[in-house]
Length: 130
Length: 242
Image 1 (spheres, rainbow over the protein chains, first blue to last red):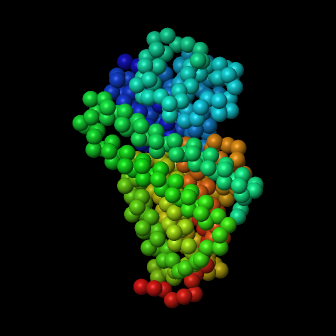
Image 2 (cartoon, chains in turn cyan, green; image 1 turned 90 degrees about the horizontal axis):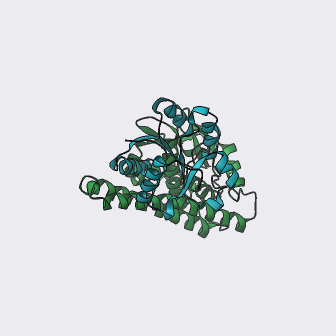
C-alpha cells in the first residue's frame, strides 16, 4: 500500500480526491499548504506527492524548490495538478526537469481514474518529467 | 474606478481571472460525479455528493452573476438608497451558510444595535458581500488548520460617523497593499491575490469592482482584531424604514 501526500487547498476537491484515491487502495495524507506539507513529509515519508500549483500565500513552484532542497527527498516523485494548460504556467521545461517533476496533470481535461493509473505507473517505475 | 490600466484591458484581465477561478466549481462537480460512478462510493456518498454539487453550482453561478452585474454597472451613475446593513449581511450569511458549512466555517453577523441605514446600491452590495464572503471562506479554510473556522460579517462606525462594513477572518493577506497589488497584477498573474488559493481571487476583484462602481471601493480593515476587506459608507439622512 503506497502513501501519498496530497497538497490541495480546496476543501471540497481535496475531500473527493482523498476519498477516491483511498478507495483504490492508497493511504492519503492531505495538507492545504506548502508549509504544512513540508512538516508532513518529514513525519510520514510519502511515496509520492500530488501538488496543486496554486497554493495560498506561496506558489507550488516555491514549495517544489524547498522540497527538492532536501537531499533525502530527491527521489520522491511529484505529480503537479494544474487547472491551466502547462503552456500557461510560467515554468520552462528545464525547470520542470531540474525540480524533478514526474508529470503535469491538467485536471480539467483528465479524470481521477487517469490520475490513479498514472500514480500506479510512477510508483512502479519512477521516471523523469513527461 | 481604482484601476491602474484602462477599463477595457482591466475588464478583459478580470474576465480571464474569473474564467480561471470558474474552473474550481466545475472541477468540484466533475470529481464528485466521477466518485459516484464508482460503485463502491455510490450508495454511501450519493446524498453528500449531490449536496456538494449543488453548492459548487451555486458558488459558480453567483460569481458569474456578480461579474455580469459589475459589467452592467461599470461607468454608470447608480442610484443609492437607504440600506439596512444588518439585514443585508444577515441575508448574505443565510444564503451562504450551507456552503460555509461544507468548508467547516461558521458565519457570524456582527452589527451594532440600532444602526441607521447607509446609502448604497442594494443589488451591488448584496453581490459584493456574497463574493467577499465566498472568497474569504475558501481562503481561510485553505490557509488554516483549525477544525472549525469563523468568518465575521462585521460593521463598525468610525470616529467621523461613517460606517465600515466588511468581511473578516483569521486568514492572512487581506489588506490594502495586497489588494492594490492584486489590482495591478490582474492583467498578468494567475494568482493576483497571493493569499488566496485557486478559485478565490477573482471574487475579491469582482467585489472591488462592484464597490468601486458606487464609490465604495474595498480597502483593508480590522474588526475586533480580525483582518479583512471592507467598504466605507455614509449614513442615510432619511428616516429608518421599519
